[in-house]
Length: 102
Image: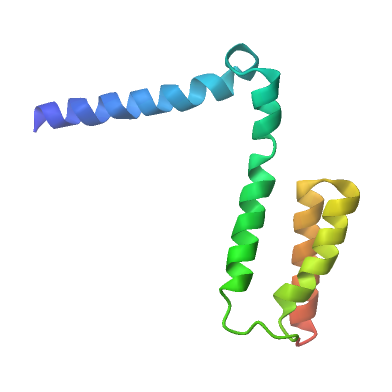
């Protein structure tokens, strides 16, 4: 049992260092091209989560507020190219439509 804890600790330290070193000092470990590519990860993951969630809904009709909330969120994303503004617009539209009973 004692050796198992050493193994778990070693794997935890190795995993932490492997993830922290490139992100803690990105200019030293990552080229500018890789850093630019990583800037697209968050929006891509967010888009994949949203599309998967909406397409998995059982009620995909015209009275679905999530579908209508995509319109202002998409417009804000296209116009500003900012993640937080897009999230705020989409959530505000969704909550507003839900409050109206849609």
